[in-house]
Amino acid sequence: MSEIGTVIATIEGPNSSEFSFVIKEEKGKMPVRKGQFVQLNTEEGLLVARVSEIYKTNRYFMRAESVREYERSGKPLMDVFPVDRWEYLVAKSVPLGVLNEGSQKRISFPPSPGEKVFNVDEKILSSFLGFNENGIHIGKISSHDMDVKLDLSKLFQKHVAILAISGGGKSYLASVLIEEILKRNQAPAVVILDPHGEYKGFSHDENFAHKTKIFNEKSISIAASNLSAFQLSELMPHFSSVQRRELNQVIQTIRTKKHVYNLEELIQEVEASEIKPATKEPMISWLMELNSSGLFSNVDSPSVEELAKPGQISVFDLSEFVHLRDRQLIATSISRKLFDARRNGKISPFVLFVEEAHQFCPEGVERESAISRSVIEQISREGRKFNACLVLISQRPIRLSTTALSQCNTHIILRVTNPYDLDHIGKSSEGITRDVLNMIPGLKVGEALIVGEAVNYPLLVNIRNRSSKKFEKTKNLEDAMSSFNQDKLKTSEDLQAFS
Image 1 (cartoon, rainbow, N blue to C red):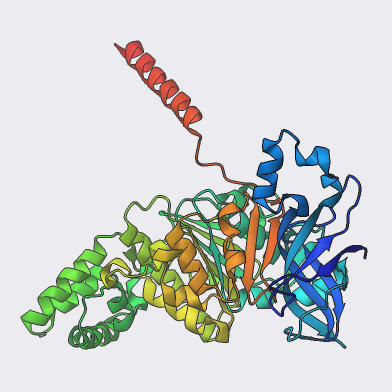
Image 2: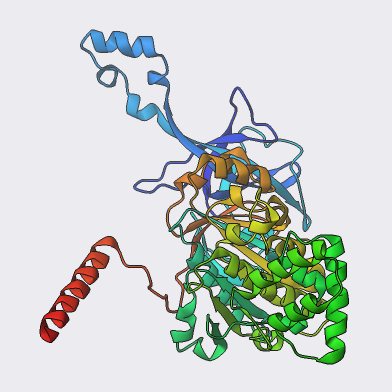
């Protein structure tokens, strides 16, 4: 722990929300960086602060008119006065809290001018930020060579939101989190709703292949006979309470005849019923629309027990499903099965990763365009009671359900530049101050801001390198054009060979 500066008096402070210190000079070395944590002794105890800004000052250049006059006379200031001896660096700092006899509290009294400022002790900082030595290792603190190890329960139990622009590293970070989960001796089940097939790389990695199951268009089906009238009405938002009641009667009737049936057989039972035509005809139309998706059959695949095994990754590759409605139907079915089974204690605790969450749980759209929103919002509200954990991943937080986003008590934010998204993040992320919010557009690829339950104070982190294999599906423009031209040439040669 080395001395790096001295607190100074300014017009504004020191006060309980901000103070400045002049940085101690070290030849050839910059002892302080923006975002760095520092410590100093105060009357309340050991104060930990974050450097919010660094600026240079020089008394000889403080008055513009003096500088102008000297320049006009042909005698630069530096030739007349020892200006280089009066240039110095000042660090603005934000007090975060005070440690005193093992307890941690907010600062209520400012540090004194003249107080010495030191590099923070790593053990003190680890305790101050709420790290866990056996926690989830996601990288290092920016401006410090110190591992970030987050408590697993604090991170996941009250849900996580990962927010960034397209290409900002959301899936990369999610893969790092998944790797860390699977390292645990007692790991929860991991389930991924994957619209673009980005997580299939786990099945090709020798360290994770035996723990990974991929479910795609050929292996996903929904058993109609396992669905109640309420669950079916979730998939058909136009259903009225009368239609739900009548459908429930039909389901009770068909279940006395057979235990297993498909949607087509249920439609036939509705057609044969004595329900009033005004109620029956729209019901049949909506059921036929559901059946046309091709997702419904006699069996559930995969079963909830198959997809929610402790320490297993279950990836639902939805990239082959063209229509958003089909993706939402699958998301609704999987999420509902998982939550109901976990609530009844039939499966292990799980972490559900939802990629492109604004597609599955959108804000401000009608129910028919947001079939899966209801169950995802329910998990966000009630899941923590049953250790049903949610990770929402989105590039457009302003389009993501505010109900679901507000229930994510930890936000991991990578680079975001859209001003509307930034404003939305500022309003929905607890503990994020204006100076921290201003850092977000300037984050580098691989750098993230963590705020909320998992850390006691906002934290900038350099995400560690992933160890799992990345599935490269998207080519860059030049490679795509080269591949297209080669395919075109091959097709032309094949046609000539047969002509």
